[in-house]
Length: 388
Ligand SMILES: *[C@@H]1O[C@H](CO)[C@@H](O)[C@H](O)[C@H]1NC(C)=O
Ligand SMILES: *[C@@H]1O[C@H](CO)[C@@H](O)[C@H](O)[C@H]1NC(C)=O
Ligand SMILES: *[C@@H]1O[C@H](CO)[C@@H](O)[C@H](O)[C@H]1NC(C)=O
Ligand SMILES: *[C@@H]1O[C@H](CO)[C@@H](O)[C@H](O)[C@H]1NC(C)=O
Image (cartoon, protein in one colour):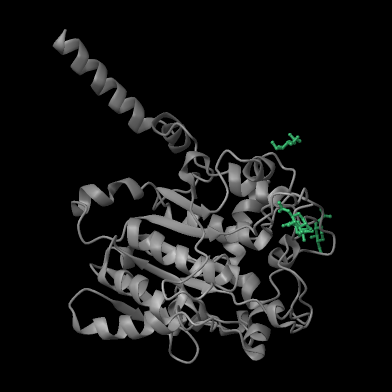
Protein backbone atom coordinates (compact mmCIF):
# COMPACT_ATOMS: atom_id res chain seq x y z
CA UNK A 1 0.00 0.00 0.00
CA UNK A 2 2.73 2.43 1.06
CA UNK A 3 4.90 1.43 -1.89
CA UNK A 4 2.03 1.89 -4.30
CA UNK A 5 1.30 5.31 -2.87
CA UNK A 6 4.94 6.30 -3.08
CA UNK A 7 5.19 5.06 -6.66
CA UNK A 8 2.03 6.90 -7.56
CA UNK A 9 3.23 10.13 -6.06
CA UNK A 10 6.60 9.86 -7.78
CA UNK A 11 4.78 9.25 -11.03
CA UNK A 12 2.55 12.27 -10.41
CA UNK A 13 5.52 14.41 -9.48
CA UNK A 14 7.31 13.40 -12.68
CA UNK A 15 4.19 13.92 -14.73
CA UNK A 16 3.77 17.33 -13.17
CA UNK A 17 7.35 18.18 -13.92
CA UNK A 18 7.10 17.24 -17.57
CA UNK A 19 3.76 18.82 -18.28
CA UNK A 20 3.88 22.03 -20.27
CA UNK A 21 3.86 25.02 -18.02
CA UNK A 22 0.35 26.12 -18.97
CA UNK A 23 -1.06 22.71 -18.10
CA UNK A 24 0.73 22.73 -14.76
CA UNK A 25 -0.75 26.01 -13.70
CA UNK A 26 -4.13 24.73 -14.77
CA UNK A 27 -3.63 21.86 -12.33
CA UNK A 28 -2.25 23.70 -9.40
CA UNK A 29 -4.29 26.85 -9.67
CA UNK A 30 -8.07 26.55 -9.87
CA UNK A 31 -8.54 29.93 -11.53
CA UNK A 32 -6.22 30.02 -14.49
CA UNK A 33 -4.16 33.16 -14.42
CA UNK A 34 -4.38 35.09 -17.60
CA UNK A 35 -0.88 35.37 -18.91
CA UNK A 36 1.06 32.44 -17.64
CA UNK A 37 2.64 31.83 -21.01
CA UNK A 38 5.84 33.48 -19.90
CA UNK A 39 8.83 31.32 -19.19
CA UNK A 40 10.57 32.91 -16.25
CA UNK A 41 9.86 34.83 -13.13
CA UNK A 42 6.40 33.54 -12.46
CA UNK A 43 4.71 32.05 -9.42
CA UNK A 44 7.00 33.70 -6.95
CA UNK A 45 4.19 35.25 -5.01
CA UNK A 46 3.48 32.21 -2.90
CA UNK A 47 7.08 31.68 -1.98
CA UNK A 48 7.51 34.92 -0.04
CA UNK A 49 6.63 33.22 3.17
CA UNK A 50 8.77 30.15 2.69
CA UNK A 51 11.87 32.01 1.65
CA UNK A 52 11.71 34.71 4.21
CA UNK A 53 9.71 33.10 6.93
CA UNK A 54 7.18 35.87 6.52
CA UNK A 55 9.58 38.39 8.02
CA UNK A 56 11.09 41.53 6.60
CA UNK A 57 9.22 41.31 3.34
CA UNK A 58 6.66 43.70 1.98
CA UNK A 59 3.83 41.36 1.06
CA UNK A 60 3.22 40.82 -2.63
CA UNK A 61 -0.24 42.32 -2.85
CA UNK A 62 -1.37 45.44 -4.64
CA UNK A 63 -3.91 47.99 -3.49
CA UNK A 64 -6.09 50.09 -5.77
CA UNK A 65 -8.73 52.51 -4.54
CA UNK A 66 -11.78 53.61 -6.49
CA UNK A 67 -14.55 55.53 -4.76
CA UNK A 68 -17.81 55.99 -6.61
CA UNK A 69 -19.77 59.18 -6.01
CA UNK A 70 -22.67 58.90 -3.59
CA UNK A 71 -26.05 58.49 -5.13
CA UNK A 72 -28.86 59.88 -3.03
CA UNK A 73 -31.70 57.55 -2.24
CA UNK A 74 -34.11 59.19 -4.68
CA UNK A 75 -31.71 59.50 -7.56
CA UNK A 76 -32.61 56.78 -9.99
CA UNK A 77 -29.65 57.47 -12.26
CA UNK A 78 -27.21 54.61 -11.89
CA UNK A 79 -23.67 55.23 -10.82
CA UNK A 80 -21.00 53.06 -12.33
CA UNK A 81 -17.36 52.21 -12.51
CA UNK A 82 -15.90 54.09 -15.44
CA UNK A 83 -12.46 52.60 -15.95
CA UNK A 84 -10.73 53.36 -19.22
CA UNK A 85 -8.10 51.52 -21.22
CA UNK A 86 -5.26 53.23 -19.35
CA UNK A 87 -6.62 51.96 -16.02
CA UNK A 88 -6.84 48.44 -17.37
CA UNK A 89 -3.28 48.77 -18.65
CA UNK A 90 -2.15 49.87 -15.19
CA UNK A 91 -3.73 47.00 -13.27
CA UNK A 92 -2.65 44.47 -15.89
CA UNK A 93 0.97 45.64 -15.84
CA UNK A 94 1.06 45.24 -12.06
CA UNK A 95 -0.41 41.76 -12.46
CA UNK A 96 2.01 40.84 -15.21
CA UNK A 97 5.25 42.13 -13.73
CA UNK A 98 4.63 41.53 -10.03
CA UNK A 99 2.47 38.41 -9.91
CA UNK A 100 0.67 39.65 -6.79
CA UNK A 101 -1.16 37.01 -4.83
CA UNK A 102 -4.05 39.44 -4.41
CA UNK A 103 -5.12 42.65 -6.10
CA UNK A 104 -7.28 44.58 -3.67
CA UNK A 105 -9.82 47.00 -5.00
CA UNK A 106 -10.96 49.16 -2.11
CA UNK A 107 -14.24 50.74 -2.98
CA UNK A 108 -17.50 51.94 -1.45
CA UNK A 109 -19.82 49.51 -3.22
CA UNK A 110 -20.62 45.92 -2.32
CA UNK A 111 -18.83 43.10 -4.14
CA UNK A 112 -22.21 41.58 -4.97
CA UNK A 113 -23.90 44.89 -5.72
CA UNK A 114 -25.29 46.14 -9.04
CA UNK A 115 -22.28 48.37 -9.82
CA UNK A 116 -19.89 45.43 -9.80
CA UNK A 117 -22.42 43.25 -11.65
CA UNK A 118 -22.71 45.83 -14.44
CA UNK A 119 -18.96 46.19 -14.67
CA UNK A 120 -18.56 42.42 -14.79
CA UNK A 121 -21.19 41.67 -17.39
CA UNK A 122 -19.96 44.24 -19.87
CA UNK A 123 -22.74 46.81 -19.49
CA UNK A 124 -20.21 49.56 -18.80
CA UNK A 125 -17.70 48.61 -21.47
CA UNK A 126 -14.84 46.31 -22.22
CA UNK A 127 -12.22 47.68 -19.82
CA UNK A 128 -14.47 47.49 -16.78
CA UNK A 129 -15.43 43.98 -17.85
CA UNK A 130 -11.77 42.92 -18.00
CA UNK A 131 -10.79 44.52 -14.71
CA UNK A 132 -13.55 42.67 -12.89
CA UNK A 133 -13.25 39.30 -14.63
CA UNK A 134 -9.73 38.68 -15.88
CA UNK A 135 -7.99 38.16 -12.56
CA UNK A 136 -10.41 35.58 -11.19
CA UNK A 137 -10.32 35.18 -7.45
CA UNK A 138 -7.05 37.14 -7.27
CA UNK A 139 -9.12 40.32 -7.45
CA UNK A 140 -10.54 41.03 -4.01
CA UNK A 141 -13.20 43.70 -3.83
CA UNK A 142 -12.94 45.21 -0.38
CA UNK A 143 -15.89 47.37 0.56
CA UNK A 144 -14.78 50.17 2.83
CA UNK A 145 -16.58 52.97 4.59
CA UNK A 146 -15.62 56.22 2.94
CA UNK A 147 -14.41 58.76 5.44
CA UNK A 148 -16.26 62.06 5.33
CA UNK A 149 -14.15 64.03 7.83
CA UNK A 150 -10.59 64.03 9.06
CA UNK A 151 -10.20 63.48 12.81
CA UNK A 152 -9.60 67.22 13.20
CA UNK A 153 -13.21 67.78 12.14
CA UNK A 154 -12.53 69.16 8.67
CA UNK A 155 -14.75 67.70 5.95
CA UNK A 156 -12.88 65.84 3.20
CA UNK A 157 -13.41 67.90 0.11
CA UNK A 158 -13.20 65.50 -2.80
CA UNK A 159 -12.81 61.93 -3.95
CA UNK A 160 -9.04 62.19 -4.22
CA UNK A 161 -8.74 63.17 -0.59
CA UNK A 162 -11.11 60.42 0.52
CA UNK A 163 -9.00 58.00 -1.47
CA UNK A 164 -5.86 59.29 0.26
CA UNK A 165 -7.25 58.26 3.64
CA UNK A 166 -8.47 54.89 2.38
CA UNK A 167 -5.14 54.00 0.74
CA UNK A 168 -2.98 54.75 3.76
CA UNK A 169 -5.22 52.73 6.06
CA UNK A 170 -5.28 49.79 3.62
CA UNK A 171 -1.50 49.59 3.37
CA UNK A 172 -1.16 50.13 7.11
CA UNK A 173 -3.56 47.32 7.98
CA UNK A 174 -2.61 44.79 5.32
CA UNK A 175 0.79 45.74 3.94
CA UNK A 176 1.62 45.69 0.26
CA UNK A 177 2.04 48.08 -2.63
CA UNK A 178 -0.26 51.00 -3.36
CA UNK A 179 -0.42 52.58 -6.80
CA UNK A 180 -2.65 55.19 -8.38
CA UNK A 181 -4.52 54.21 -11.53
CA UNK A 182 -2.16 56.25 -13.68
CA UNK A 183 0.91 54.34 -12.51
CA UNK A 184 2.34 51.71 -14.85
CA UNK A 185 4.62 48.93 -13.62
CA UNK A 186 7.57 48.59 -16.00
CA UNK A 187 9.41 45.79 -14.20
CA UNK A 188 9.33 43.61 -11.12
CA UNK A 189 9.71 45.24 -7.72
CA UNK A 190 10.39 42.05 -5.82
CA UNK A 191 13.99 43.11 -5.08
CA UNK A 192 12.59 46.24 -3.45
CA UNK A 193 9.90 44.40 -1.48
CA UNK A 194 12.51 41.95 -0.23
CA UNK A 195 15.18 44.53 0.50
CA UNK A 196 14.35 44.40 4.20
CA UNK A 197 13.04 47.96 4.36
CA UNK A 198 9.67 48.16 6.06
CA UNK A 199 8.50 51.02 3.87
CA UNK A 200 9.58 52.40 0.49
CA UNK A 201 8.62 55.57 -1.36
CA UNK A 202 9.98 57.66 -4.20
CA UNK A 203 10.64 61.35 -4.85
CA UNK A 204 8.71 63.45 -7.31
CA UNK A 205 9.45 66.73 -9.05
CA UNK A 206 10.41 69.26 -6.38
CA UNK A 207 11.72 66.66 -3.95
CA UNK A 208 8.65 65.55 -2.05
CA UNK A 209 7.87 61.87 -1.67
CA UNK A 210 4.98 60.98 -3.96
CA UNK A 211 1.91 59.49 -2.30
CA UNK A 212 0.70 57.76 -5.48
CA UNK A 213 3.25 54.95 -5.22
CA UNK A 214 4.42 53.51 -1.93
CA UNK A 215 4.78 50.14 -0.28
CA UNK A 216 5.11 48.90 3.26
CA UNK A 217 4.94 45.97 5.59
CA UNK A 218 1.76 45.79 7.67
CA UNK A 219 1.79 48.39 10.48
CA UNK A 220 5.20 49.72 9.41
CA UNK A 221 6.13 52.78 11.42
CA UNK A 222 6.07 55.01 8.34
CA UNK A 223 2.44 54.25 7.45
CA UNK A 224 1.36 54.26 11.08
CA UNK A 225 2.72 57.76 11.62
CA UNK A 226 1.38 58.93 8.27
CA UNK A 227 -2.06 57.51 9.06
CA UNK A 228 -2.10 59.29 12.41
CA UNK A 229 -0.66 62.60 11.26
CA UNK A 230 -2.71 63.00 8.09
CA UNK A 231 -5.82 63.43 10.22
CA UNK A 232 -4.24 66.34 12.05
CA UNK A 233 -2.62 67.85 8.96
CA UNK A 234 -5.72 67.85 6.77
CA UNK A 235 -6.74 71.37 5.77
CA UNK A 236 -8.24 70.85 2.32
CA UNK A 237 -4.93 71.61 0.59
CA UNK A 238 -4.17 69.35 -2.34
CA UNK A 239 -1.24 67.47 -0.76
CA UNK A 240 -0.93 68.78 2.82
CA UNK A 241 -2.09 65.50 4.36
CA UNK A 242 -0.51 63.26 1.71
CA UNK A 243 2.83 64.16 0.11
CA UNK A 244 3.75 66.61 2.84
CA UNK A 245 3.20 64.12 5.64
CA UNK A 246 4.81 61.12 3.95
CA UNK A 247 7.80 63.34 3.14
CA UNK A 248 8.19 64.65 6.68
CA UNK A 249 7.72 61.27 8.32
CA UNK A 250 9.66 59.31 5.69
CA UNK A 251 12.72 61.55 5.83
CA UNK A 252 12.75 61.56 9.62
CA UNK A 253 12.64 57.76 9.66
CA UNK A 254 15.84 57.51 7.64
CA UNK A 255 17.64 57.52 10.98
CA UNK A 256 15.85 54.38 12.15
CA UNK A 257 17.42 51.30 10.55
CA UNK A 258 15.18 49.61 8.00
CA UNK A 259 12.13 51.81 8.50
CA UNK A 260 12.16 53.78 5.26
CA UNK A 261 13.90 53.68 1.90
CA UNK A 262 13.48 56.75 -0.30
CA UNK A 263 14.21 56.25 -3.99
CA UNK A 264 15.16 58.92 -6.49
CA UNK A 265 12.53 60.55 -8.67
CA UNK A 266 13.27 58.41 -11.75
CA UNK A 267 12.32 55.26 -9.84
CA UNK A 268 8.57 55.88 -9.60
CA UNK A 269 7.74 59.38 -10.87
CA UNK A 270 10.15 60.40 -13.62
CA UNK A 271 7.71 62.84 -15.21
CA UNK A 272 5.44 65.36 -13.57
CA UNK A 273 2.25 67.40 -13.93
CA UNK A 274 4.09 70.30 -15.64
CA UNK A 275 3.30 70.95 -19.30
CA UNK A 276 6.84 70.27 -20.49
CA UNK A 277 6.88 66.93 -18.69
CA UNK A 278 3.48 65.77 -19.94
CA UNK A 279 4.54 66.88 -23.45
CA UNK A 280 7.74 64.87 -23.11
CA UNK A 281 5.76 61.80 -22.05
CA UNK A 282 2.70 61.85 -24.31
CA UNK A 283 3.59 63.88 -27.43
CA UNK A 284 3.15 61.96 -30.67
CA UNK A 285 6.25 62.16 -32.84
CA UNK A 286 4.89 62.02 -36.36
CA UNK A 287 8.38 62.12 -37.83
CA UNK A 288 8.90 58.63 -36.42
CA UNK A 289 7.15 55.87 -38.39
CA UNK A 290 4.24 54.24 -36.66
CA UNK A 291 4.72 50.71 -35.43
CA UNK A 292 1.45 49.95 -37.24
CA UNK A 293 2.26 49.57 -40.95
CA UNK A 294 0.24 51.39 -43.60
CA UNK A 295 -1.33 48.14 -44.70
CA UNK A 296 -2.18 47.18 -41.13
CA UNK A 297 -5.11 44.88 -40.70
CA UNK A 298 -6.63 44.05 -37.30
CA UNK A 299 -4.82 41.16 -35.66
CA UNK A 300 -1.66 41.37 -37.81
CA UNK A 301 1.51 40.31 -35.94
CA UNK A 302 3.42 43.23 -34.41
CA UNK A 303 7.16 43.39 -33.67
CA UNK A 304 8.46 42.95 -30.11
CA UNK A 305 11.13 45.70 -29.96
CA UNK A 306 13.06 43.89 -27.24
CA UNK A 307 16.18 45.75 -26.29
CA UNK A 308 19.48 44.14 -25.31
CA UNK A 309 21.54 45.57 -22.49
CA UNK A 310 24.22 46.87 -24.88
CA UNK A 311 21.97 48.20 -27.62
CA UNK A 312 21.85 51.82 -26.51
CA UNK A 313 25.63 52.08 -26.71
CA UNK A 314 26.24 49.73 -29.61
CA UNK A 315 23.50 51.16 -31.81
CA UNK A 316 22.69 54.72 -30.82
CA UNK A 317 21.36 55.29 -34.34
CA UNK A 318 18.39 53.08 -33.52
CA UNK A 319 17.12 55.57 -30.96
CA UNK A 320 15.38 58.88 -31.46
CA UNK A 321 16.67 61.93 -29.67
CA UNK A 322 13.29 62.31 -27.93
CA UNK A 323 13.34 58.73 -26.73
CA UNK A 324 13.84 58.12 -23.05
CA UNK A 325 15.61 55.19 -21.50
CA UNK A 326 13.23 53.76 -18.89
CA UNK A 327 15.81 51.29 -17.52
CA UNK A 328 15.98 52.91 -14.09
CA UNK A 329 12.25 53.37 -13.73
CA UNK A 330 10.35 50.68 -11.83
CA UNK A 331 6.94 52.29 -12.16
CA UNK A 332 5.95 55.12 -14.41
CA UNK A 333 3.60 57.58 -12.75
CA UNK A 334 2.05 59.02 -15.90
CA UNK A 335 0.57 62.27 -14.65
CA UNK A 336 -2.26 63.14 -16.97
CA UNK A 337 -2.15 66.39 -18.95
CA UNK A 338 -5.93 66.56 -19.21
CA UNK A 339 -6.55 67.45 -15.58
CA UNK A 340 -5.28 70.95 -16.30
CA UNK A 341 -6.77 71.01 -19.77
CA UNK A 342 -3.32 71.19 -21.30
CA UNK A 343 -3.24 69.98 -24.90
CA UNK A 344 -0.38 67.76 -26.01
CA UNK A 345 0.54 67.57 -29.71
CA UNK A 346 -1.09 64.62 -31.40
CA UNK A 347 -2.36 63.18 -28.12
CA UNK A 348 -5.98 62.82 -27.18
CA UNK A 349 -6.51 59.66 -25.17
CA UNK A 350 -4.55 56.59 -24.18
CA UNK A 351 -6.02 54.09 -26.64
CA UNK A 352 -4.69 50.76 -27.92
CA UNK A 353 -3.85 52.47 -31.23
CA UNK A 354 -1.89 55.23 -29.49
CA UNK A 355 0.17 52.71 -27.51
CA UNK A 356 0.69 50.16 -30.29
CA UNK A 357 1.85 52.86 -32.72
CA UNK A 358 4.84 53.54 -30.40
CA UNK A 359 5.31 57.17 -31.32
CA UNK A 360 5.64 58.59 -27.82
CA UNK A 361 7.67 57.94 -24.70
CA UNK A 362 4.61 56.74 -22.84
CA UNK A 363 3.69 54.36 -25.64
CA UNK A 364 7.21 52.92 -25.74
CA UNK A 365 7.25 52.42 -21.98
CA UNK A 366 4.00 50.45 -21.83
CA UNK A 367 4.19 48.77 -25.24
CA UNK A 368 5.55 45.42 -23.96
CA UNK A 369 2.48 44.87 -21.77
CA UNK A 370 0.10 46.18 -24.44
CA UNK A 371 1.65 43.77 -26.93
CA UNK A 372 0.96 40.85 -24.61
CA UNK A 373 -2.68 41.93 -24.45
CA UNK A 374 -2.74 42.37 -28.21
CA UNK A 375 -1.21 38.95 -28.83
CA UNK A 376 -3.84 37.38 -26.57
CA UNK A 377 -6.57 39.04 -28.58
CA UNK A 378 -7.70 41.05 -25.57
CA UNK A 379 -7.19 44.43 -27.21
CA UNK A 380 -7.78 45.60 -30.76
CA UNK A 381 -6.28 48.62 -32.47
CA UNK A 382 -9.77 49.94 -33.09
CA UNK A 383 -10.83 49.86 -29.41
CA UNK A 384 -11.70 53.20 -27.84
CA UNK A 385 -10.35 54.50 -24.54
CA UNK A 386 -13.78 54.02 -22.93
CA UNK A 387 -14.28 50.46 -24.17
CA UNK A 388 -17.55 51.15 -25.96
C1 LIG B 1 -34.93 63.88 -3.39
O1 LIG B 1 -34.52 64.87 -4.33
C2 LIG B 1 -34.94 66.17 -4.03
C3 LIG B 1 -34.53 67.14 -5.16
O2 LIG B 1 -33.63 66.53 -6.07
C4 LIG B 1 -34.35 66.63 -2.68
O3 LIG B 1 -34.79 67.92 -2.35
C5 LIG B 1 -34.80 65.65 -1.59
O4 LIG B 1 -34.17 65.96 -0.37
C6 LIG B 1 -34.44 64.21 -1.98
N1 LIG B 1 -34.97 63.25 -1.02
C7 LIG B 1 -34.27 62.30 -0.45
C8 LIG B 1 -35.00 61.40 0.49
O5 LIG B 1 -33.09 62.12 -0.69
C1 LIG C 1 -27.71 61.36 -9.79
O1 LIG C 1 -26.54 60.55 -9.74
C2 LIG C 1 -25.72 60.67 -10.90
C3 LIG C 1 -24.57 59.66 -10.77
O2 LIG C 1 -23.94 59.78 -9.54
C4 LIG C 1 -25.22 62.12 -11.01
O3 LIG C 1 -24.42 62.25 -12.16
C5 LIG C 1 -26.44 63.04 -11.12
O4 LIG C 1 -26.01 64.38 -11.12
C6 LIG C 1 -27.38 62.83 -9.94
N1 LIG C 1 -28.62 63.60 -10.15
C7 LIG C 1 -29.16 64.36 -9.22
C8 LIG C 1 -30.41 65.08 -9.59
O5 LIG C 1 -28.68 64.45 -8.09
C1 LIG D 1 -25.81 43.18 -16.08
O1 LIG D 1 -26.07 43.27 -14.69
C2 LIG D 1 -27.07 44.20 -14.35
C3 LIG D 1 -27.13 44.27 -12.85
O2 LIG D 1 -27.26 42.99 -12.30
C4 LIG D 1 -28.40 43.76 -14.98
O3 LIG D 1 -29.40 44.69 -14.64
C5 LIG D 1 -28.23 43.69 -16.48
O4 LIG D 1 -29.41 43.19 -17.08
C6 LIG D 1 -27.06 42.78 -16.85
N1 LIG D 1 -26.82 42.87 -18.27
C7 LIG D 1 -26.46 41.84 -19.00
C8 LIG D 1 -26.22 42.10 -20.46
O5 LIG D 1 -26.35 40.71 -18.54
C1 LIG E 1 2.53 45.27 -45.89
O1 LIG E 1 3.49 46.11 -46.52
C2 LIG E 1 4.85 45.67 -46.37
C3 LIG E 1 5.76 46.68 -47.04
O2 LIG E 1 5.47 47.95 -46.58
C4 LIG E 1 5.02 44.30 -46.99
O3 LIG E 1 6.35 43.84 -46.78
C5 LIG E 1 4.03 43.32 -46.39
O4 LIG E 1 4.12 42.08 -47.07
C6 LIG E 1 2.61 43.88 -46.49
N1 LIG E 1 1.72 42.96 -45.77
C7 LIG E 1 0.52 42.63 -46.24
C8 LIG E 1 -0.27 41.69 -45.36
O5 LIG E 1 0.08 43.07 -47.28
